[in-house]
Length: 294
Length: 276
Image (cartoon, rainbow over all chains, first blue to last red; front, side, top):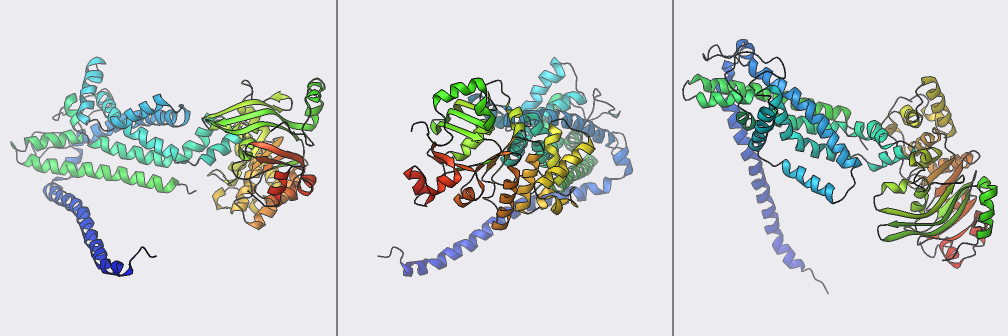
C-alpha cells in the first residue's frame, strides 16, 4: 500500500517550484524597499548638507546666521552625554545582568523582574523624558544639565543593555563555569576570571549598539527642556548643553523661517551618522578581536 | 534494596567502633551513609552506602541514567549547582561530613578535584589554564607558579608536547591533549582525590590509551574515582568497581572478582552486555 501517489507529486511539482521562485522575489522586494528608502534619505541628506560641512561648521559656535553657524557645542554636548550614559549603563547594566543571570534564585520574583525589564525596553522614550524631568531636573534639582540628560538616556537604554548582557552571559558554556567551580573557585572568582572575560565582547557589542540608540534620541531631551540655541560650549557634567539630535530637530522646525537651516540640519545629520558609524565600527572591531570559539 | 554486603560495605556495629578509633577513615577516603538524592520529585540516588578506599582507582559503571554521574558529583558537591537538587544522608570525607552546612564547598573542591566528560579548558593560554587553580588560592609569585605549571604538566604526560607553546591558547590543542591539560589543571591544586566523569568518552582510541596510562600512574599519589560507560576500561584500570542501577548500588567489590564472578545476577547480565 503506497500513500504517496507519484503521479500527483509530478503534477504538483511545477506549481511548487514556481511558488518558490515567486516568493524569492517577494522577499527580495521586502529587503529592497527598506534599502531604497534609506538610500533616498541618504542621497537627499548628503546633497543638501554636504556642501555646508566645512571646518567652521564643525568647530564653530552656534549662530543665528546660517553662514556662521557651527555645531561644536552640540558635538561636545553629545560627547558629554555619552560619557554619562556609558558610565551608568555599563555599571548598572552589567551589575544587574550578573545578578539576574548568575546570583539570583530562579523563581517567581525573578521571572517577574525579568518580564518587567523586557517590558521597560518597549516603553516610549518620551515617557522616560517625563520621568527624567520629574526626578532628575526637578526633584534632584539638576536642571537641564548634562547629568540630568545623561541619566535620563541611561534609564532609557538600561533595559536593552541588561537584556543583551544577560544573553551574553548565558552564552558562556556552562562547562567553563563548572571547571572553575571544580577547582574550588568562589562564584565571584569564576565570574571575574572566566565568565565575564568570555562574555565581554558580546556585552560590549550590545552596549555600544544601545549607546548608538541613545545618541540619536531626541524626544526625552525635548521634554527635559534642552535648548537648541546655546552659545557657550559645555565643559562638565553640571553644564547646560545641547546635543546633535536637538540641533537637527530645531533647525528642521525653523527651516520654515530661514531656508538655509534645512541645509544645516542635513549637514548635522551627516555628522551624527558619521559618529554612529564610528561607534558601530568600534563595536564590530571589538567583537572580532576578542571573539572566542568553542 | 538492602545495605550492600560486598567487600567494602561495613556492618553497623563496626561503624560505631570506627568512629572512635578512626580506623576506617584511614583506609577509606570517602564513606557515604544512606545517601539519597532527588532532582525535584525524581529520586536519583537511593540509600548509597559505599566506602571508597584511598590511593586506588574506583570505577563506577552502569547504564545511562543509573545515577553514576550524579553520585560522583555529590562527592565534590557539584550537584549543588543544579537548583532543584536535594540530598539526604552523610558523606564522610576524611572523617568529616561534607554535606553539613558549615563545610564549605570551595574548600572541599580544593581537596577533591574533578575532570569532566568533555575537555573544558578555559579560553586562556596553556600556562594560565594550569596556573588558574593556584592563583585563585592566592599564589601570585611567578617562580612558584612556573614550578607548579611545569610539574603538573609533567605529571599529566603533556609537558613535552606543550613546553614550547605555553603562551598559546589552549583551544589550539587536540581533544586528547586538552583533556590531559584539564587533568594537569586539576593536579595543580594538589588535590587528594580526583573525580573523573567519563574522561575518555569524547576521545579517540589513541588519546584514550594515553589518558588511561596517565590515570594509572596517578593512583600512586591520588585517590581516583572514575565514572565510565566503557566496561573494558573499568576492567583495565580500576582496583574496585561499583555497579549502579536505577540509583542503587547493586554490587561493589574488587574489579577482578566483580567482572569474573559477579554475585548479583543483574551485574552478570550487565557485564555480559544483556542490557545497558
